[in-house]
Amino acid sequence: MSNNPGGLIQLFARHRVAANLLMALMVLAGSWALAKLNTQFFPNFDLDIITVRIAWSGASAEDVERGITTPLEQALRSLDNLHSITSTSAMGIAALSLEYDDGTDMSTALEQVNGVIALARNLPEDVEKPEVSRIVRYEPVARLLLSGTHDRQELRPLAEQMRDELLTRGISKIEINGLPKEEIAIQVPPERLLELDMTLEQISNQIQKQSRDLPAGSVGRDDIARQLRALEQRRDITGLEQLPLISDADGRLITLQDIATLQRRPIEGQTTLSVDGEAAVELRLFRAESAASLGSARILEDWLEKTRPTLPPNIQLRVYDEIWQLISERINLLLINGGGGLLLVVGILLLFLNRRVALWVSVGIPVSFMAALAVLYLAGGSIDRKSVV
View 1 (cartoon, rainbow, N blue to C red):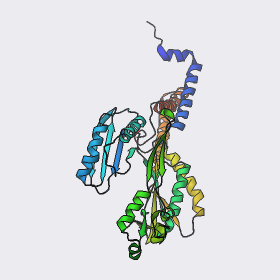
View 2: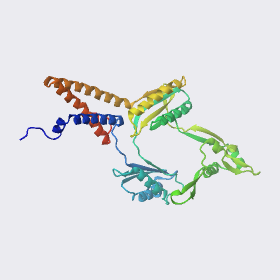
View 3: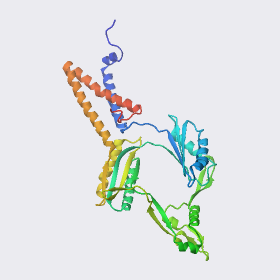
View 4: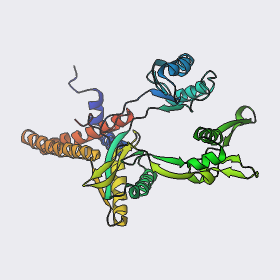
């Protein structure tokens, strides 16, 4: 019986160059995977859910269920790979949640849902346009707090400018808190209503009738068909001021600005933020699953370095709740512990083996880790809180 080892050990013992090349390939593959691996706080997981939301102003919950929820449930139940439907009917709103089987192509599923809703002919005529969206998971990166003035409206253009700049640089999503939503208030003096022999309800109906976008058919056939829409919805004060209402006795067209005062103002009863008695606005930064947390952090740091010197003297910009720092600290802890453990292993190997054998055994540890990183990337994994524990 032969005492020579067989298999890969015998192969690499005879061909040392092949063993060295394999180690080099493992190191190169691990280095490439390390540059590609996503760094994040939680591992990736799919949310195969599509939501449908339809508003019907003034309708009771029973009317919403009978007129919207039930017909849509019946129309959507036959979709491919649909696992379950959950619906909620409330006063003035219908909400449906569609959960799909694992592995479903959600882009195709979203198109199917939009197609079914577009063909639904038995919905009430005065419902608003359905909002169909796929639930996408975002992970927080950091929060920015903007303050330094008593007038909250001074912070609005600055916060919106910051949001646009960060989105352009690569931040996936930004939410602004502390800025109340605005509305356009239309005030008509009672004497003008008497002169025109009109009521507020009649003026409201005229605005609703003339300020909206309507479908106007299509042009072409099959793949080259294009839908047409009449874009008449007024979205600012200037557009509403030019809205025609009626003609006077002389045949002159009277517009809304002739009888009413229009102004944009915050909606009352909304939550606002304050810091030390001053108005404040918060920007919450998020990243998508395809973006790395540390990469988003670098984008934020570069932007802060460029933006802070350009801020007005009375404006303060603070950064807090930086989630990405937890990832960086955990990775640094892993590197420190790994380096200390490697030195301890090398020291013990030198006590019981000769230096050459101890060296090659020690080299095998980081090489194995690099190969594991390559396998992790090919398997679709990431460097997150779970994988570095």
